[in-house]
Length: 210
Image (cartoon, rainbow, N blue to C red; front, side):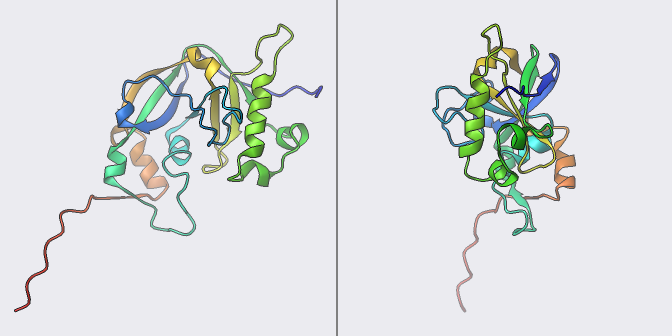
């Protein structure tokens, strides 16, 4: 293809967010190779880390990505689940170069994909896009991109980031913050009308019949 993909640059000093579990507090960032996520490598030769530029998108793409928002108007989450999550504040240490898949004409004009293929739960097409972008080299033989910027399926029109493992040195954990203590958590709960359900207490035995 002679047409070039548009570049989206994230400058050093910016802060990104990744939602994880408290058991991973203090551990290195994990670049998954399971092949089960949207922009994973289909051949599982490189890992991918998924990041959001704000808490709402990071949460919607992780904790709430399987929630049936139309079918379940209650939109609840157990307090125990909230307390098991932390937000990894990820600092950009060096400029990150992303292929901008959200730019006009890229998905249809460059990759030949339609909206259904892009948002499908079948990740065949998007994983192929990941592999194509990962393989792109510049005239100097160096990789063109550190990952992709893609439209969030669960928080559209927000954008999400799939960062290739080869860019691991360009980012680092600044802080691990318990989700319940995150400054943006109350705003998310209010905006997305999410109810936090208290943990059920012990079940009391029924009184004996008199």
